[in-house]
Amino acid sequence: MRVSAVVVSHGSATDVAALVPLLEPQVDELVVIANVPGSVPAGMTAIENARPLGYAANLNLGFSRTAGEALLAVNPDTRPEPDAVATLADFMASRPRCGVTGPRLVYPDGRPQASRRRFPTVIGTIVRRTPLRRVLPQRRHYHLDEPAPVEPVQCDWMLGGFLLLRRAMLDELGGFDEGFRLYGEDIDLQYRALRAGWERWYLPDAVVAHAHQAVTDRRLLTHQTLWHWAGIARFVRRHPERLRAL
Image (cartoon, rainbow, N blue to C red):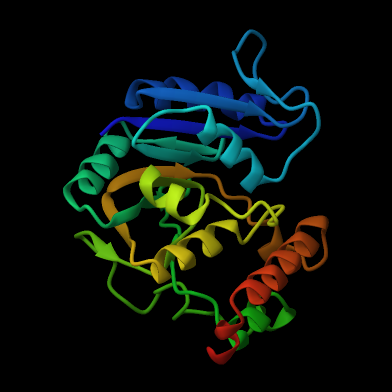
């Protein structure tokens, strides 16, 4: 299974410089998108946007310039272990209805990162996006009360920092919804995948370090918070049946 990777950088030239030497040997094709000037190291070949695009639009752009059977969406602040991509791709190739595979994400210091999650509920969303989260941790949402998987497991959705996506699934679903500027496009895609009968698998043997700033979890009111709420609103408009999930 040929793998094409797309890295979207919004002013993250230093991260891109550190990531590309780790990622390039693992994939068959690599496209880097510079969303704003100064997003890639000097001399690096990249698609340079005339104006900034949302993350979903950038991924669709990158995927349209590639030919792999599997498409890897990569954040610049990730650092894959040497066999991470092969582990994800080999598993996907072994299961015809596997549309998404995701690795075990860890913080740079090795601490586990809760990248395997349940689809959002009304109450859970209110808690996570308000000060209530400081007193009501969403352990079920993050699978924190379960033993950490040691074998591949199916899940609702996985954090979009490093995801392998089957091109046939993306073609069927029409790619990412470009109405999401930032935040929510990964949940939306994987929810539509579920409804179309595509499997989403978490693979603990594929390990990727991810800095994951999580600005919306640390600060209550930022531009990112507003974009996050806009993403939530769009998800609900697109999938109103989720309002029944308390």
